Amino acid sequence: MTNPILFWHRRDLRISDNIGLAAANQQSPKVIGVFCLDSNILESEDIAAVRVTYMIGCLQELQQNYLQSGSQLIILKGQPIKEIPKLATALNAKAVFWNLDVEPYARERDRHLTQTLKDQGIPIQTFWDQLLHYPGEIATGAKQPYTVYTPFWKNWISKPKTEPVDTFQNRETLTAQQQEAINQAGAIPLPTAKDLGFIWDKELMLAPGETAAQERLEEFCNEAIFNYREKRNFPAIDGTSRLSAALKFGAIGIRTVWDATINAIAGSSSDEAQENVKTWQQELAWREFYQHAMYHFPELAEGAYRHVFKSFPYDNNLEHFQAWCEGRTGYPIIDAAMRQLKSTGWMHNRCRMIVASFLTKDLIINPKMGEKYFTQNLYDWDLSANNGGWQWSASSGMDPKPLRIFNPASQAEKFDSNGEYIRKWVVELRSLPTKQLITGEISDSQREKLGYPLPIVQHKIQQRVFKERYNQQKVE
Figure 1: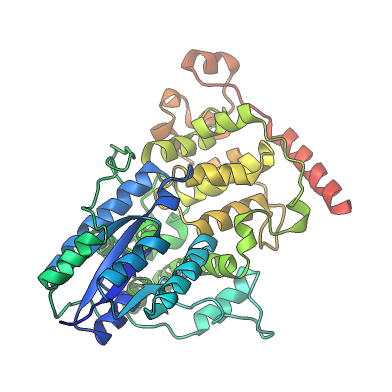
Figure 2: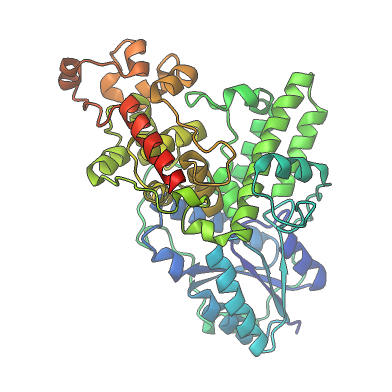
């Protein structure tokens, strides 16, 4: 009887282009997958029902793919540092493999698990899978991590990229004895999101699983990618990849994604089309920049990077914050974006920047409050990307232009000039002329008649207040 390798899935819910799983497959004819529903995560107040729903959908397809490959995906529930060693011991596993993560909680969890398995005499092997270049591979001439994107990008793009790895194909099935050991070790049927207490009965922006992610990648690279540089900024247009959730949960491999961009460049009909593809490649590099930053500077998860914002005097007006959350600020573009988030579990990236700037620079509210709200509502939430985006918008992060302040009206004029996006999400304003939608210059009587609130703050005034506080903080 062959002792199996146990492969622990975390943010890599696929059997194709999975570096750790492919390595396990090369080293043993018998590989068993496992996913642990981590109670430390599921019982957190910062979990989103839409995100759990997407994750469970990915696991459903992953289970089917394991069965078709002659193996199985075991589901556990509890604390991984207890459940994984218990299962590995019950199976007399040859080793436990997994792919690494940059997030502080995952790294601490892995340290504990590594020690427990070592104490039990069970070998481990770990791999970098979710990045094209692991932390430490991209460094300055002084061997330090980058804190500015542009030089990071220049170094990152100069490095050769790894090809996608082989799809998992198990060669030996489990024995009856091993199956019994799995059952005795606490394996459970895969629950639904509702079983876990999470209710999301709306449509997902992207169907879960490998198949849907691959289809979306192909669709995007066949058309929209060639106009990406311009159309990515318009929230009323389907001009982005919408693969963020698939990348967050690893329903698609980053090497597969990169390979698709190379093929798109090769198939481009013009220099302009190639430049559009390269712009999307730069967005993939932004994703890695934020993950490298989180790895090297885990304190980012707790607060501001720039000293001037570590004790910034935010107002933190809770009524204003609630109005922002509900899309009732009186600023049409802000309210449209916040209502899109609440309704779909997703928000266009341009709008994420606009609403984050408004919260931190107009309402003068601590970005950690907005970051947490996004955590509680986004289906594609990723700690590194969410934190990086919020710190960029709040001017508190690794950003050479610290006082970038978005004017909501100017942003609407540039990126929703016909008011199409606003009309879709702020339905009570649909009858108004486009100019009023964009500028927000709606009379008090019109607002009252349409049931739309007055602006909760005045942009010009708040902009001045914010700058004064910032300049004062720099002096102190």
